[in-house]
Structure formats: C-alpha cells, structure tokens
Image (cartoon, rainbow, N blue to C red):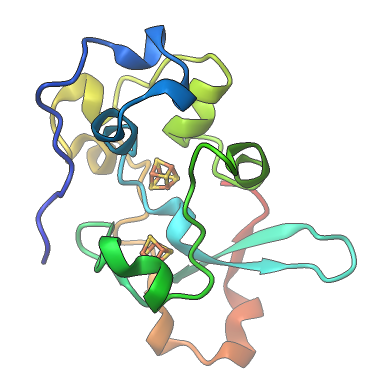
Length: 157
Ligand code: SF4
Ligand code: SF4
C-alpha cells in the first residue's frame, strides 16, 4: 500500500482562506486534496443529456487502501479518462466534482470541513469521518464494462 504522498508542512497558515485557488503555489494546491478518491470513481455520461453519474467502480490506477493514485505523475498517460484539475479547466471540471471536494469549497469561497487533513494534520481523518470511499469501492478490473450501469450510485456525491 502506498503511503500518503501529500506534504503539509511549510504551507502558509490557512492559505485557502486568504488566497485564490489560481494564485496558490503547487505545494498548497496539492495539499488541498483531501484524499477522498471520489473523483477517481468511474463515471458514466448520458449521451443525450450530458449528465454524469458516479459508479462505485474505482479507476484501475487507484490504490483502494490509501485512496491515492497509484502513479500520480504519469496518470494522464496511463489513464485516458483521467481529468487533471488545473487553473485553466477549473470552471468546467468543478461542474461534476463532488460536493465535498476541497477545490470546489475554496472556489466557492467556503471553508474546509473539520475532517480535512489540513485542519486535523492527519491524512486518516477523511477516512475516519466516513467521507472517503475507502472500503466502499470495487476495482475496475473486477467488473465487466457491460455491467458498469449496475454500479451507478448517484449523480452527485
Ligand atoms: S474529490 Fe477533490 S478532494 Fe477528493 S480526491 Fe478528488 S480532488 Fe481530492
Ligand atoms: S489515473 Fe489516478 S488520479 Fe486519475 S482517476 Fe485514476 S486513480 Fe484517479
């Protein structure tokens, strides 16, 4: 199992309250991710309406134990559908990102929840709070693509 890769030392105190997402240095940008893994679930898009539905199927690169990407630096090359949130696509991507996502909260001018690792100093707090998907996902390799519809859990999580 991979260890938590996020460095949360040397960051400005409560930087998310005082600086726009677009202005954050890389370390603070990366530290905002709470490790919930919700955005790494396989999602299905309705061809007619464009509506996105989440399944309980984890991307094949996700470490189901840590809820972290198994190869973060090469994720785009290894998984065609992996969407990398950045300053240029944030408006578009946040349209389907989970309601608890820290990037969404900060973008909307809201504070981080009390279970966020930046508040607790502990990467396990997102799991203890029951917010992450740990223990509630199935591996992509274990589900035939023709059965993905059977694993839809919600349109927004
Ligand atoms: S939904 Fe947001 S906070 Fe959760 S893993 Fe994805 S980017 Fe990180
Ligand atoms: S490639 Fe990594 S970051 Fe992208 S969806 Fe899969 S597990 Fe998540």
